[in-house]
Length: 172
Image (tube, rainbow, N blue to C red; front, side, top):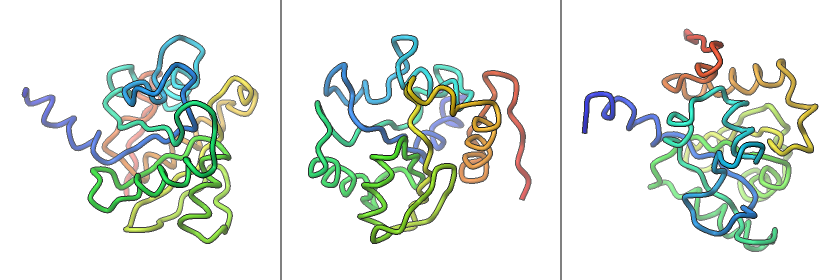
């Protein structure tokens, strides 16, 4: 492991990107995968402003395999809230994912898009709109900036926005 790998390792351990389901299959490696161009993972990588390597270093998971199932989503969401997991920040992509966690963690109290709240086991939940093509108009430059700012505050060691030259240091 190189010195650069040692520096990058803790970054990946703190963040989990959570999606709905993958139409390309159930292999966990392909959850929110950033290929092919135009898929949700590709859009999310661009929204976050990360290089492909930076993006793929983050943990990624889907709540369902195949079609969306509320029962399967709830079960998987519970698994991902494990206090022994390597992440302490979950980025919830889309309304279905956010609603699943609202019911589990906050007794149904809404977590609105572009907001953040600490839940079970001290895990921070950040809600973002789904990065699908259906929400393309929603993901304007102001929305991207808001998402990156939320993430910079939660996980300042990740260079959010660096792939497009808009990374900024957040000072406490």
